[in-house]
Image (cartoon, rainbow, N blue to C red; front, side, top):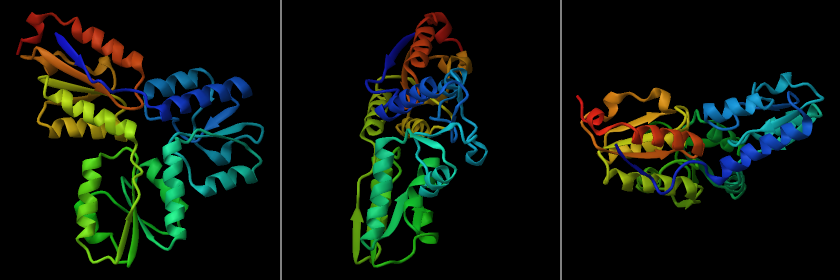
Length: 288
């Protein structure tokens, strides 16, 4: 089978930094002596490798031994998490993505300037939960209906977005907000350019292939968003984590497949998938 790979895919710098920080922390403090507050990134394969190296990703701050170090994962954490860790005398290792850290600072600044902060994002995502904790009151909206039920009227509002959201979705939400009679609306772009590039490359690749494979954690927001965009582009799309989830029926009757991956997907997962997909003989790829 012919396989085309997206020009931009896989690890972003924030994920690479988080993994390097986690590995260095284990090397410095010793296996079993570093506790991450949840999975460092949303990728089971990477999480498993870090655990094998000796990183505890139990995520329970209150149960961390005072002699151990605590690792803040790439998605960041609320201010009170840092305060509680300091109160317990824990050594804090911060692997928060620099762009998530910026979003946290922007939310605080907007609040300090007198804006009611609105965040476009998934209210259940750990990044969003951490970011909105940097102001006393933040309204989270993620779809049009949220604007009718959750968005309060304030004369001055400041808007930010989850770093992994698509620019098109964010722009559509902002356009709807601007239809309302706010005296002042301030928008600060907190989107991750690396994620945006991966989304654009994936959508472009959809025009060249018959089926798309988006590799990455099923709980990864940026990977799910990429799969959604590919489907929206009119291409049959499969979001799977590794080759183990592949089924021959996915490429039945097709001769050209596209492959991309979320920002937390390691290159070795992509390479293995592409190699095995390319090995499918033509007669297998056209069976129904």
